[in-house]
Length: 400
Image (tube, rainbow, N blue to C red):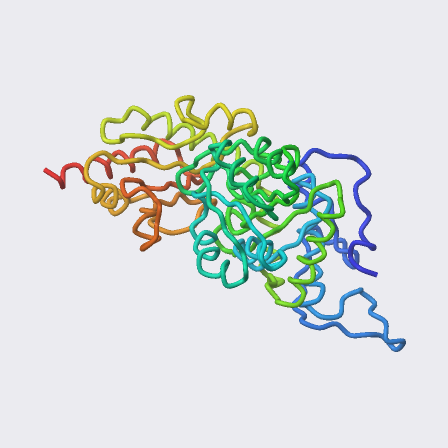
C-alpha cells in the first residue's frame, strides 16, 4: 500500500491555515512521527511475490514517499484536485509548454519572470511554439492576440515580476476559455494566502516552491496544480505532465521535499507579516523625495490596485519595487549601499533582499533601469525603512 492508503485523512474540512500548519494531519504510519520521515532511497524492493509493498518502485517513476504529502497539501491549499512537485519552478513552468502539441500558439505576458521569458525566446521556436507576448493588463490587446489565431495556452503572472503589474485574472481566463485555450496562472507571488486562481478560472496553477512556499532560501522546487473540475482537456494535459516528469526526471530530492513541507507549515503567519511590512514600506516611500514611484499593488495610487483588491485577499504579498530619482546608476548604488537588505537574487524568504534587476538580467532585460526590486522578509519594518533611507541618502550624496 502507498502512504496515502495507510494515512487516514481528516474528516473535518479545516481552513487552509490549519491544513498548512499540520500538513493535513499526516503521521508516519510506522511510528506516528509528526514530521514526515526522510526516505533516502532511489529504488524499492519487491517481495517474494514480486509485489511492491509500499507501492513505490523507482524514484523517477513515483517520487519519494514524501511527495504524496507535499503534493496533497499544496493541492488542498489551492483548492485543486491534484498537484505535481518538480525540481524547480522553471522545471514546472516549462513542462507546461513542453507538453503542448507541436506548432501550438501560446499567449504570454510581455512582463513576467525573466527566466521563463528567456526560455520561451531561446527554446520555444525550436520546439515549434509560436510565442505571442502581450501586455496582460490591456484586455483589448489580450483579446486581439488570443482571437487572431487558434491558441493552445494563455499564461498569466499577477502581480508580474519585477514591475508588479496586475492582470485581471478572471477577465483573461474568460478570454482564453472563449477561444478554447487552456489558462495557466503563476501564483508564486500571491500564494494561496492571498489569491485563489481556480476561483478566477484557471485550469493550471504554477508555483516556484523555492519562494514563499518554502520561505527559507534553502530549497529549489516547483509545483503544478490541476483545477478541481477535471475536464477532458485538463485531464489530457495533466497526464502528459505526469508522463513528462516521469520520463525527463525533474525530480525533487527527499531531503528537499522534507524541507519544503517544513516551510509550508508556517506559510500563513509568514505571509501575513511579510505582506503587512511590505505595505508599510510602500506607504513610507510613496511620497519620498528620492523615489519617483513605488510599484506595489497594495497602494491605492497603484494602477493595478482596484483589480488587485478585487482578486487578492488579506494582503498584497511581499514584493515591491522602488524607482529611484536621478540617473539610473543611482538606483544601482542604492542596492550597493544597503546594509540590512541582502544583495541577492530570489524572493520569498524570511530575510529581505534587494536587487538591481536590470543589472542582474543583463542583455535583453526589460526591467526599468531606475528600479530596485525588494523582497520583504520578517525583520522589523523600522529597521528596513532605516536601511533604505540611509542607502537612498548615500546614493544621492555620491551624485553631488
